[in-house]
Amino acid sequence: MATSTLFNNFNYTIKLNIMCLSLNRSITLVIVVLVFITSTCHVSSRRSRVLNEETMLHKHEQWMARYGRVYKDPNEQEARFKIFKNNVAYIEEFNSQNQAYKLSVNKFADQTNEEFKAARNRLKVSSTRILAVQIASFRHEDVSDAPSSLDWRTKGAVTPVKDQGPCGSCWAFSTIAATEGIHEITTGKLISLSEQELMDCDTNSEDHGCEGGYMVNGFEFIVQNNGINTEAAYPYTGSDGTCNTKEEAIHVATISGYENVPANNESALLKAVVMQPVSVAVDASKFQFYGSGVLNGTCGTDLDHGVTVVGYGTSDDGMKYWLVKNSWGTDWGEAGYIRMQRDVEYKEGMCGIAMMASYPTA
Ligand SMILES: *[C@@H]1O[C@H](CO)[C@@H](O)[C@H](O)[C@H]1NC(C)=O
Ligand SMILES: *[C@@H]1O[C@H](CO)[C@@H](O)[C@H](O)[C@H]1NC(C)=O
Image (cartoon, rainbow, N blue to C red; front, side, top):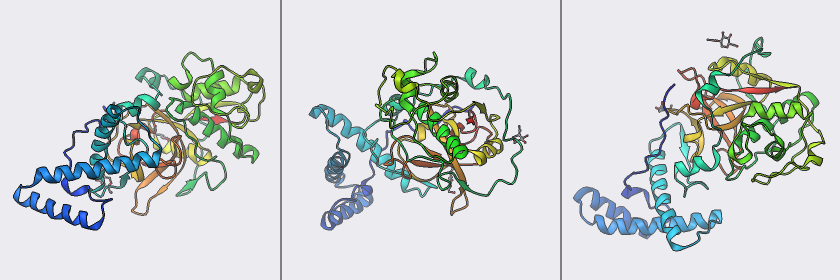
């Protein structure tokens, strides 16, 4: 299996010419002149570095105000500023390359990639777990004439994007999104269902609320429990709790079982997605600053995040993609969604998207 290419190297030198965005014209002019002088004569570099530092401080303050971020003391603020500065430099450098997708200085901009992954990507999939995926039956094998593009949102089978917060409950969000999908497809009713019930009441030894779990176990819980309650009745708290057995006993949506999609096969994944939203595991190490476009290029296959494929298509510039619903709020990615390259040259799929896909059955 390919080892992941994480972008955990944030030692980017700060480019002199990328810090002018929020300054007024006159200061911008000064910086442009300074950059010109610096880059041609290698003088005044110290002065422009000071100016850039000020610009960046201003940018950090604006960002803090926008996202309501408050630090506990000046030490923390300084440490966070350093991380922010490195991230912004990395993002602006990446975006200057005219890639198929853009990064964004989003709400995660003051976290290192390690911190970010530790807080929310808690789907820990071992290689033995992947090898253990059994394909007892694949009911969508005979699907033919798949449309060239499909979006389950426009068919009314996808609830609004949710936000797991700093809690490793992605597995519950993925389980629930796929369950909401099959429930709508079979009953015509789109109902937001409860992740918290899964987190609190699923006693499978592999599932641990904010500390991670597996989508197939989530489906198994819903089967064994004879259904699951609504988000409204059993709302998300973003932390581990004890099972509310009264709400657990109310079964608004049911499933009869679940199946795995034949692994490492994007054609099989497509057949499943034609029929319903599908839970998938991905290596989300490149997700932190994703802004828009189709995520392509190198990515790891260390599966650490659960999301839901809710469609597919081809972008304006001809790149095939999977349409993926995430659970990091609407202020991440494309209003909470990410498009990931489809039909890549390696069988695991982009970021391992075809390695461990599953779906509930009605
Ligand atoms: C991939 O899946 C398709 C559709 O289910 C199947 O027809 C094909 O044989 C599979 N390919 C491989 C290499 O397993
Ligand atoms: C991603 O797509 C863009 C646009 O097609 C291309 O220029 C770039 O080389 C691709 N990246 C990789 C690493 O394949």
